[in-house]
Length: 572
Image (cartoon, rainbow, N blue to C red; front, side, top):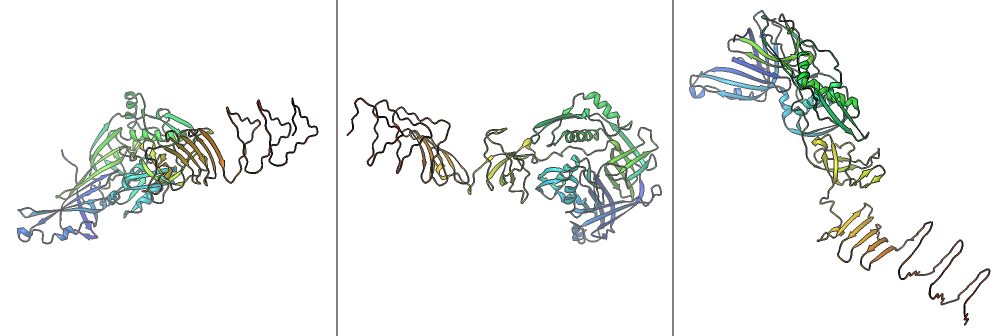
């Protein structure tokens, strides 16, 4: 298949020094959502013995890790010489190929500076911040030129980077935000698809081939999410949400056909949303991402300035095809004959949207954490925790799973500061933590009273020392409620059986409208000093058998009138 080419000059500089050897080939692969890869082939002719075809291999191996700049300038006249391809990267591999015919090659492989963002997987927590601010802060931590960084329209309440490289995290955030986070060969940008940077490609002049591919895909989605802070669920599907702009005749082909093929919306997982509008944004993003994959075009041109994250406008083809396209991938080729051409992948501009594949957050499992705050200002029984991997960063207020919860009822056992807890995550999403329980550790071991070989003791102890102890020892079963100093106790025991209420140094008060004490046998009231019984009205003491009242000292009986009745009455 013939390829449209143009004569060109190629200049390569490594660490600021121009490579003056014979360049036999340059291939640069650029993708909008991946790292760019450059391969430069340098031809070397032997000047010494076959065993030393490379006079000094270190001349080339020293390229490793150095910056590399490539400039390809068209010289054929069809394309203006100012339409140069410029790429800045970093050398990541050098290969020395020896041949017995003395025609040796050096293959220099380089990547875009974004490759440094794959250095390691990280963990980080972010609160009340926009996606663009997070991405901007991360990108500026690398040796890369930062270009246009469009601001996000909304603030993220809480988002977690969990075991993700900065590159994967940036791509995930950008996708949810509806923006392309990409390197265009010279600058890192965060932008929505637009025609701000455009290159016209004229059929049979600068455009040598163009293939149009239209397809169908599920593009409508539904979701139901629950917001516990509002105690309500939100449901919707994208088919009920109108599109913000009308599509061109070409771009509308696939969505119209897709609606006929797929008549039911597909479920999509949604993040925590605060209202129906937020859910609509999630569903709209999912639909836009699907539509962005429906129409894929491929082309071949001789315009070096065709770049990812830019647009090309096709001219002088069929009316259906003549329009702007968003470039998603380019392969630039400069061959040994000094000719240049490129191939590219694009989609209609009005459909362009980041793809959501591989952009889901990492799935996480149960995690230990330390309680750093347990006073929820909204009084929802939540706590804040800090993970071992989160440094000084803490979570927002997180719900604590308890045995029973409901309006003005349930069990309220909130862990104390510095307690260790176990944290789970709704749907495995690290941005949705929930504390599932408390756990012991070497510095927070169970109470010594609970150390029973046969597991006979169950207890609850507060931080001040108040205790409720359940003893299951056979024949000695008991329930004991004890104050911190042990001076006040209520004991229910089977050893007797008996109930003991004790206050060593304090008072015991029993109050009620009516109080009734009843036993089947004996009631004993004993005081260490005085015993007083007083009634604001009448007092009645009655015995079905004998009644005895006795004093070791003086016995006084006094009343406005004293009646003594008996048969007989004996006074002694």
